[in-house]
Image 1: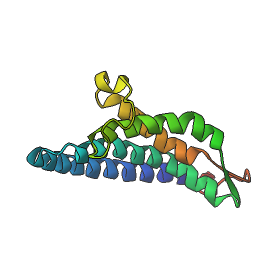
Image 2 (image 1 turned 45 degrees about the horizontal axis):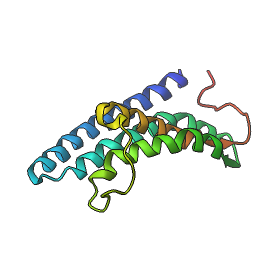
Image 3 (image 1 turned 90 degrees about the vertical axis):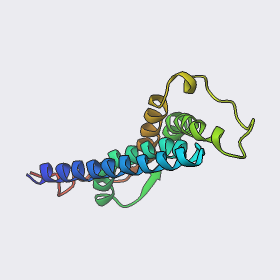
Length: 146
């Protein structure tokens, strides 16, 4: 029962953050339309999935952190998965930044992928940032004991 409640509460928290995030996105989109400045909405579209990706990993991250002492970072996983996805996330809003003219090449996939590719890349990046943390110890959480 504790396990169900733990995961159900996290589902509610993530659902609430999604709801608030969609409300905030509509506000940012409206402001961008009024000011003709696309940078804020592009920044939001790129970074909100990163937050959601991190939230999806947070329950397991907390359980691992409770049961362990020392931690290390898996730089290989981060470099192999996180950095390419970070590049795609950055390329969704960097071209709209005032200082970015001719800064970095933009992958062609961003032109025909719409917002799907940056959204998936943001989710992967947010998840990978927390998934790359390795904790010592194999003890199970008291929360998950049934």
